[in-house]
Image (cartoon, rainbow, N blue to C red; front, side, top):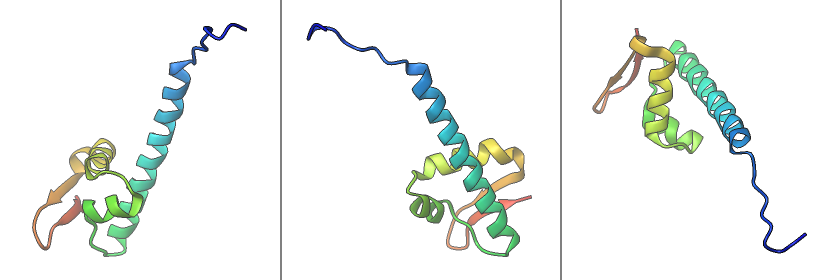
Length: 84
C-alpha cells in the first residue's frame, strides 16, 4: 500500500449512528421530563442540560420535536417546562 493512499470512510454510516444516538437521547430526555412532571417536580431546561451534559438548545429542540404544541416554557424564578 502506498503512503499516499487514503481510506475514505462511509459518512452516511456515521450519520446513521449519530442520528440513532440523538434519537435515543431525545427519547430519554422526554421520558425523564414526563416522569418528573407526573411526580410533581419542577423541570427546567438548564437543570436537564447540566444533568445530561447537553446544551440547553438541544434539550429544548428535543422537547419541541417530541411534544409539539403540548409543551410550554415558562421563564423566570418559578419557570420551567409545562405539559398541557
